[in-house]
Amino acid sequence: MKPSFRHLAIRTALEALAATTTAAGIRSKAHHSVIFTLHHVRPASGEPFDPNAHLSVTPEFLDIAIRECLACGFTPVALADLPRRLEAEPDGRFVSFTLDDGYRDNRDHAATVFRRHGVPYTIFLTKGFAQRTSTIWWETAEKAIRAIDAWAIDGRAFDCRTISGKRRAYRYTACMVEKAADECRAVEIVDAEAARSGVSPVEIVQELVMDEDELAAFAKSEPLAHFGVHTLTHRIMSKLSPDTIQQEIADCAEWIGALIGERPTTIAYPYGYDWACGIREAEAAAAAGLSVGVRTTPGKITGAPSELLLLPRVSLNGFYQQRRFVRALLSGRMMKSA
Ligand SMILES: [Zn+2]
Image (tube, rainbow, N blue to C red; front, side, top):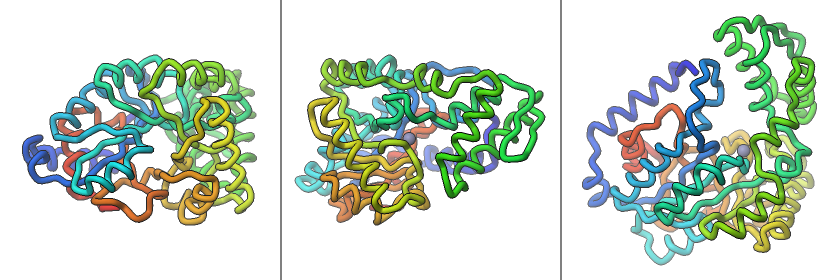
């Protein structure tokens, strides 16, 4: 995917930070912790139309990122253990790795890298993806729009014979889903248009996400892997009723507990932006017995934070797969404290 102006601006800021930051400087001066967000960990696709490129890093880059964390003096800890470690050592430098959605490449590619370094990690699971009752609209739209020459959505028709046409169609589709009052209905519209184009939304979930048997076996064989709540259906929680929010969180926690044999204590709110989750969702998580919640709003964690259910995370983004950018992120400069 061609980087947008926003990505170019972020890259410029990261380059500036990297040029003035050393691992030794971070080791001697930094007293904060960082939670990293990942999604896919897999070889680069090389696709010219790759609208979700930011959600995918290579196993080689994950290895580099872990090495840089260690070089900068960060101690890797499981997210569930982070509050206890900060309580005991408020000036400590800890890093937690988290992966959203339960993609199979987490097992097939990321697990090997984490095992190599003995680094614990947390995978956030959506019950509907594992059970194939929910589809992943951004993956569906990507695959369908890549394959076809024309895309019609929400009364708009797009010429998709060129990469720029495909990008326009994807951007409109993403905007339509994120702005919809009824996300289920919007996803049905995307799924129906994809099906008309010969792309099966359910087959995409089957292809990309671990099912329940795989998850249970993986959890048993991989002590470094921890699991957290990513809700029942992966909808924008701020648009849901209080009862539905409670059900989305509590029922997912119960499902993970039964599947893995250990009740989760952590949650990543779907999408994770400020407009997608807040106090109401944190209260529902607390009521469901969860103690650590993460968003996708960037930030560093200084000392022992008072609000453990709305912690910031920093994305290890597919656009910035360079060791120096990891160092820039770890420096915590230009980042708000939680
Ligand atoms: Zn997600």
